[in-house]
Amino acid sequence: MFDVRDMVYGQWLLEEQGRSSVPPTSTKMLVEHYRRDFIERIVGHRLIIITNQDVDAVCTVKILTTLFKTEGIQYILLSCSGLTELKAKYDEYNSQSDRCLLINCGGTIDVLDLLGNPPREKLFFILDYHRPLNILNYYNTTGQVVIISVLESEENIPEFDEIFREEPPDSSEEEDDHDDDEALDANGMNERQRRKTERRAQRQLYTTWVKKREHLLFTYREHFYYSRPSALYGLEIVWGMSRDDMESVWSAIVSLTDSLVLGRLPRPKYCEYASTVNDHILRISNANQLPRDCLKIRFERDLFLFLYRHWSVYDSLKTTPYVVSTLKTWSQDGHRKLKQMLAHLGLPLSEVKQKYANMSLDLRRQLVEMFSSQVVVENYKLPDLVFGSFVAEIGFRPKFNALDVQLATLALLEEPDPNKTEEERFLLAVLGLDVRNFEKGGIEKAKGMMKQVNNQVQMMVEMKLVQEVGPFLFVQLTDSMIDFNYFKRPAGIPLLANFLQHAGIRAGKKGWRQSPWLIMIPYDQEYFVAVGVQPGAFEQADKNIFPEVFRCIKGKMGEDVVGDWFDGWAILVKNQKRQVFADLLLALSE
Image 1 (tube, rainbow, N blue to C red):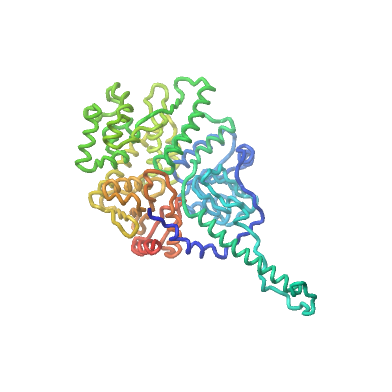
Image 2 (tube, rainbow, N blue to C red):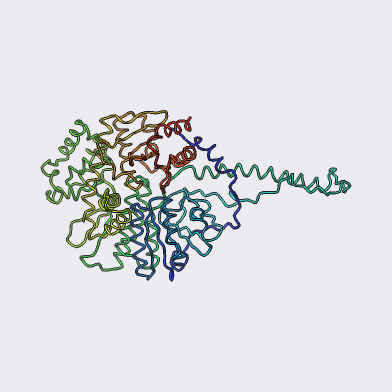
């Protein structure tokens, strides 16, 4: 498998040279008790909430703002798309409060340095699922940064003494007024010579420690990955305040589903967190006698088909990335194989091509068992077409699942409407999480988004856009045929990127599975988006080294590259510098 570990180490060492390694304290700023360490410290203060623009942030905002309203905590809600906007909005509003909550932004950077080292009375709470955490946030020097998180087993943060140490004085710094007639010891050295020898030994030990520190920091920072969704921490916070309900649980479920669909969590982790969320559902259900018209949630086996309850089963099969890539439905053979599978299952085309709600009730009840049969698993290689999901219902209304709500929320967030600002789209996405209103607009926009994804994948395969360049697979997309407005930010890009990788591997060579992908997506007339995808990213959530690679390239290309997003695996590159960017990437890999 391709390994880019050594690509950036030399450049990284150059960047680390000269940085201070000595803070005055070793305090670890982690929240240990949500009420004491978080809620009680913001009560009585107006809270500035600055949030990233992704589905997990939308769900977290929905949970926490409901709590703040109940507890009488005033807040200002701001959303931002990158580091520059984060700083601009903080500078604009920081005079209104000395408490700030950062949701899915600020965890991987030195937030105090970015914000201009605010006065010590300013307090920042960071709730961020991006990893690795910045060391200077974790070992905070002023007590101004508080991280709302529980460290996972894979978060190997170096110990304080391994990172920070006082630098010993230089052995050449000696006074000139020592008497040459000082008494000599048993080794024939006077006091000045003994001090110089001790300092030289200390410097040698310090040099060894610095080399070890450089290795530890590089190893810690070399891979970018995602931790537990922030909305799950939001759920724990409202639970700790005895304010949790089914709506807050549902928001956490949508966030968890988003991490699964976009490849941010492996399936074992998803199942682990889903089990925890299901415990909350059982606890709330048993503690309250819920009336018929209240939200009820169940964890059950369901189809991993996008929007099938609001579409037709046939259209859903033709647009779900997992099915499309495995059966290659963009080709005539794949299209024929899909129809053959439906025939083997005993599903008439007249039934599956009409709306799901109009299908025969008996067939609807049998769909899960049919698609989990050995025919589908063994003959058509679709073992994951049925998965554990959360299904909800309100009164006598039709059921809906978390997968559909996640796609609807993503589509609202990424809606290519020039008449709406990013702030407006974010607020609409928050409102769209309302279980009684999510179908208004979001579902239809999600259908349009998935059609665009499938059209782009089909074009990539038919035009053979995948090129082998060195150890990489390059995919250069063009905007001549497809509208890319849905895929211009990290919230929606993984849906397209992982689909392209999966489909490309199925349609190409077997060796492509072990190669990293670089996908270039049109952004505007001046820039394109460069997306780095690890090998097999569609199969399991793997750690991504591209953020460190892109950071080194940005150091060489300067203003021709914009690395402003919180998700470092995607950057903006000027169109006229496309070849320079590709050449640097290849040079680093050699």
